Amino acid sequence: MKTTQILIAGFGGQGVLFAGKFLAYKGMLEEQNVSWLPSYGPEMRGGTANCSVILSDMPVGSPIITEPDVLVAMNLPSLQKFVDSVVPGGKIFIDSTLIDAKVERTDVDVFYIPATQLAKDAGFATLSNMVLTGKVIKETGAVAFENNKETFEAFIPAKKVNLIDINCKALQIGYDYV
Image (cartoon, rainbow, N blue to C red; front, side):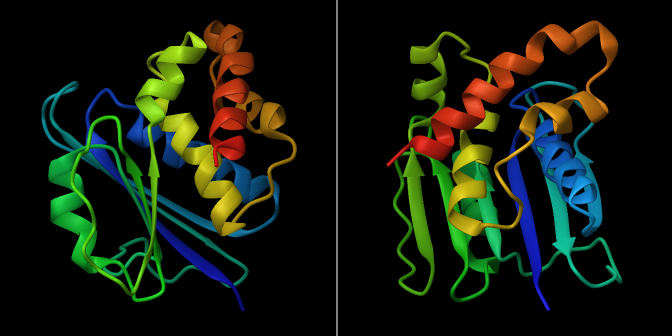
């Protein structure tokens, strides 16, 4: 039995919901049981946003995550809000370009990824979400790293298909980051 509960959190406009949707579709295409639950404030950009994704080989009973196995923190308020909820033995992924704070817990694995800077250096400044997602895939094994283009094609609208290749490149940058 394998279940991974992932909480992705940040500001609206950082692609929190998009990253969660990618993981959910990836899980579905791999025939996993999936739940995707977005949560965001009334502001479209700049407000708080988080997304809960559950990937499991068993039916998902509830989309609510109170103790995530994985936390992706894209800003400091999100890290501060959710760091203590991660289960012992869990994994925390931090965009270290935007967050200077260090996690003091010793019972979790923490990955500091300069995702925003890596995305900027590659020429697509707005894709730090996918850089982090690539690292999450590598370190958790919750989904496979193959067939990413097909996953994007499953949910990206036709008018945005030109963005699929750069999203795949951003995933690769995160996956390869050491």
